[in-house]
Length: 596
Image (cartoon, rainbow, N blue to C red; front, side, top):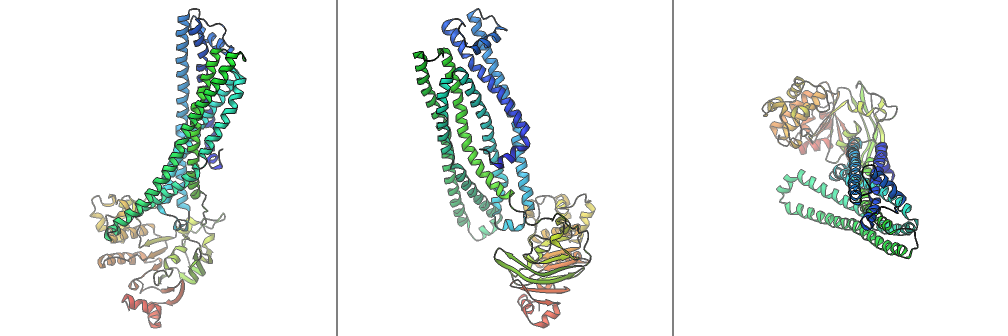
């Protein structure tokens, strides 16, 4: 019944789970002892004496007799009732102890799953997320992991308790009457098969529901991110229409899953009560006809014990429904956890401690699936050089830059740093050589200081201020309400584009790496912001090897080498003057940009 995913999750807690089983057994034994006191109670009430008890009944009365005089009927009745209360108290004490032991297990499983999901998100290549909706991945990491606790772990806990209860009670029933119990053993599997048939389709349906929930989550995330555009284009109606359609589809799937799951509990109860009635007829006939040595008081005890199985059986039905729903959720989580980490450090990785000579790009090609993005690129970037890559949108400029720190792996050719293929390098040491400033500035919901010092530890405030000064950011940071300690909010949207970019440059300054990648770092800015950012970039590029991706050719006129990409191929290369004299693609781009 348990699949490998569940086993791998609960394996670290096997000793605690064994303790839970043991404590559960004690609780169940106290419950059975309570039920076994029905026989002496019935005898005492209807016959006024305790003679003719079963072996178990006599032993229980000897135990009660240690604390009370059983010769007086009234005292005997009071003593038995007090004994019942004590046994119930002990039963519930051990039941609560079970929950107390399991509570940290459940919370720790979810904590571990979330941590594994987050770690995996950090480790997976960017190509994985290009085929996934971000909202759906977030839904799996947050909602689906929580659902595991509500379904799989809850069901597992219920099944441990319920199965143990049924097992121990069945043993007790066989002790009382094997004839009736053999008859019961025919009824219980029939009920189990019916409940199983109800639960079987829940896993598939719940997986569909969770996938749709991910789509809805992604739509909400896109709506919040693109709210300015939605409002600007008066597209609220369109966005709401898409949301309504997705929401209704999700509600319909949820309705079907809930109805099928809810059917398990009443069906279990109905089958249990039906079984009790059948046993009453069959067992009652045996007692009345004298076809068994079962006495009337013990038959009542037997019925009471069997009735105690109904609730656990009902709980198993509900738990099975939850379990199948939870497995669908777990499948979605493991689709991420089992995804291949195609970009990782090799076992015998080379450590890169510095950049001394050159970056060589030899006959490099790259494809997204079947779409060729780069074809047969050959380029050498010497230490201290500024190399610019220009071309129309979609020419492959940013992709070329992403290949250097191995955000993607080449599909043909090789890239080497100081003669070492980067695929043979330790990934952390490789990326420690690069700083990146892109047009899509990423700021975190944290203070200005922590955003500038991101990825660095034990950085002094003086170092952060110096980085901000180099990046032309110190003046506006000083004017913020709490200076460096001002919280930026979500993605730093309370700052202007130029201010966000200068904080991003300050981060690169503080990182102080030998290689700098500038990907459209001055795009979409007003003249003053562009001037301040360009001044900051000019300072940062000093004594560094720089790869510049640019649309605005004014920013690359002083490059040591300019590469012109077209359709994923290098069609021209040289200095600004050489390319202008050539009169080819570059000069046409310059004319379009009005920088000739």
